[in-house]
Image (cartoon, rainbow, N blue to C red; front, side, top):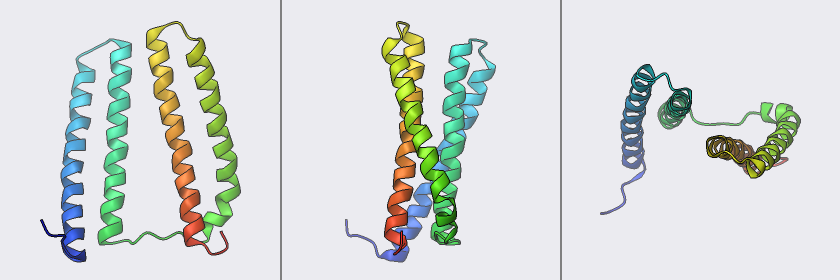
Length: 144
């Protein structure tokens, strides 16, 4: 298979993202339907986590589509205006990771340990995203 040129590659990416969005919408609907079928708080919590993640995935996919088709991505100088607050928040994220790891390591109950592990992964994801934003800042701002 030969690599497609820029415009064709972009169109294929957008098409794939739209298909992925359809799958996320299906996941949102499925999780909502399953939530209606159970009163079990643990099952409902897990289904709600998945549903909410699918909603967010759909939004990120739309951002990607828009960035390729209508609104190119840019970081305005406003990133510099909020950077100190973002760095402070990143410290909070790291503290929450340490708290959750300590709780997980001390927890003797499987369900609670599993949910603490989920929270750790999610908080680590936030820390990672803030790290990516820092990399974008370094690469896009000559003074960054």
